[in-house]
Image (spheres, each protein chain N blue to C red):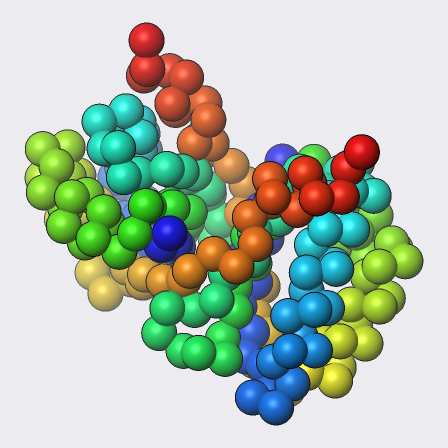
Length: 109
Length: 109
């Protein structure tokens, strides 16, 4: 499995357009991509125009190839180009060691 | 709801101790804290001694007060002091706008 945590800042006069765009992208990724397993969207608790996404994919290929080839991804890139502050977009990549559900099952009766 | 995304680097000769400690902390947080809703642990895909945690709490108080008052948290702090590279620990805070499960339910028949 492959984890992507995204951080980016949005231009303040483009917030509504951005929120509409990320909502469509997150929903379509989950609905249309078998390899997209989880997609949460957060607004920063410290910076009002900053957002974070927490995404889980089947593997790296499901993110780098399948996600980026999806039709909704092309639409999403247009939203990024129009709304995101240039240079603010940072991706952090990881591989799960322990997922919440596993831990919960392991401990709870 | 309140999201915490943690990044930290572990001393290379303390990796086993660290992994045991974060496993206990993640499982106990989910099992014993009603306010801890999700706790995933990832190893960085780019830096072998870097780790990330993705945690969801009922609200900010459940993280700042209840989580930090739990007995397992005191044990976890000892592991942090012994294993984590000083100054490498960074917390990122957010509030969910859209959680994966909601999106999936909204889109799938």
